[in-house]
Image (cartoon, rainbow, N blue to C red):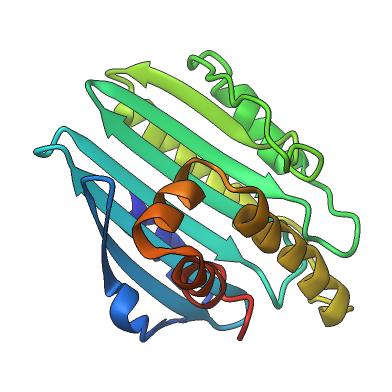
Length: 214
């Protein structure tokens, strides 16, 4: 699905792959990660992380959009296939400077409201995670989850967002989330900290996954 999402992005914003150096391949907690990052002209920073492990029984895909140039919320897509379960998580974080009409995203959520919900739990970032975010989990629903993801991504990219009017404020709001991840931890953050150490994890997040230091 990540390749389809990249294709959707590429239709609107030219993507140029950037060199992620030693972070191209990572190993953590019995998983092997393949990492890529892109400069999306007119949009911002995009990264993709694909992981496999546990003898092929687990697959994880992540795609992150940090919209530095257009005043959209930050988007994080996660897909986990394990033991027959398919988990779809698309989270949006309030990094926009100006108010934005997100009706199109709620239309997509309503369209797929019959798909089984997943309890996202309680996290330090709940205050900035937008209610339009998605959390689904089920079995034998991959086609439906793919369709929902594609529709949601298309709606996200079509939102009536304007060019960023206050780059510094935009940076501050995005940094607050990324630095919060590094400070407060979380499932994936903790895995990387254990495997790479705090310093390299911080570099991975800032330079490669979110592009906040460029």
